[in-house]
Length: 158
Image 1 (cartoon, rainbow, N blue to C red):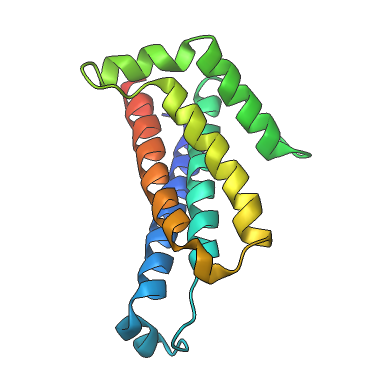
Image 2 (image 1 turned 180 degrees about the vertical axis):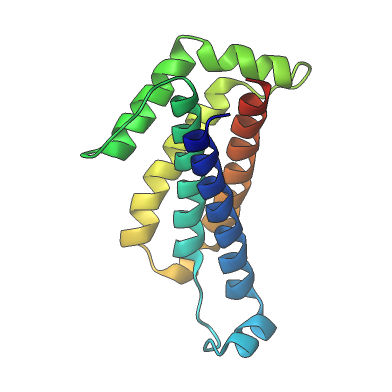
C-alpha cells in the first residue's frame, strides 16, 4: 500500500473514531458533564459528517491504489463517479468476493452505502435539527464501519 493510500486510510480511520466519539458524547450525560458540555447538547450531525468522510477517504484510498486521483472542484462527486465506474466494471466486486467468499457482501452494497451517506451528509449537516438525527447517526456509523473495513481488506490483499 502506497504512502498516499495509507494516508487516506488513516484519515478514514480518524473520521470513524471521531464519529464514534461524537456519538458517545451525544448520548452519555456523564461524558458531557466531564467535558463541560451542556445537558441536551448533541452532535449527531457531526457523527453523520464524520462517518461520511470515513467512507469518502476510504473510496479515495481505493481509487489511489488503482492510480486514479480526484481533485476539486466537485471532488466528492468525481470520487463517487469513479468509484461507481470501478464497481460497474467489476474491478471492485471481484476483490470483495474473494475476501467475503461465502458472504452476501457485494460491491453494489458499498456503492449504495457511499451514495446514501453522501446524500445524508448534505441533508443532515445543513437541513435537519441535531435531535432528529440519532437513528441516522447510528446507521451512518454502521455503514462507515462496513465500508472502510471492506476497502481496508481489499487494499491489504493488493
